[in-house]
Image (cartoon, rainbow, N blue to C red; front, side):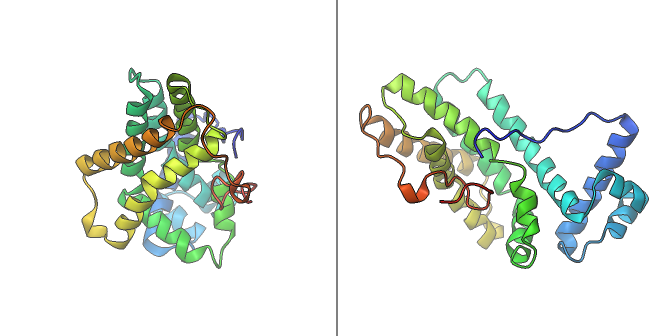
Length: 238
């Protein structure tokens, strides 16, 4: 949700941080190999080479462990996006293309697709998995995209009725298709050149539509979609 604070990760002593990392590494391997239900905390402890008590000390239950795995996976993308925002790229359009490229690289990576398969196959029976993901807040990519669109609007003299909603629409247009392609045809994963070409094409089309409407001429977000950033995030329904 816009404005929601991002989870705070405490700084731990090196030994504890090392054990936490081993637990997360083991959980990734087991969740992807066995699925959620067939992965036990005992198995994670054995795979990580720690006691089950240690696993529970870091993660209260298996759902919390799953959420931490998802959070760690997203942290790398968040870092790349922040680096893009604070880079020397001054043009908002160029920066948006960089943002989409990073997003495509992350969301079509094998581990990302594997976790998406786990979510889509098991959340009907285990809705708490979606709750674990939604507790992380709105994906950071929407925040940085909205900030870049605001800057582009200032430079080109148009007004966005709802920057977060337009950012969400842009992210969906840019990433959903390639991600679905990668899910349905794993052998046809796009290379970096195709990711960049997709990013620049969608960015060009989207910004051209915004910039040519003129100031205050862009349509408002439909009432049925107002606040609907991602439907699986709590508080973002219609």
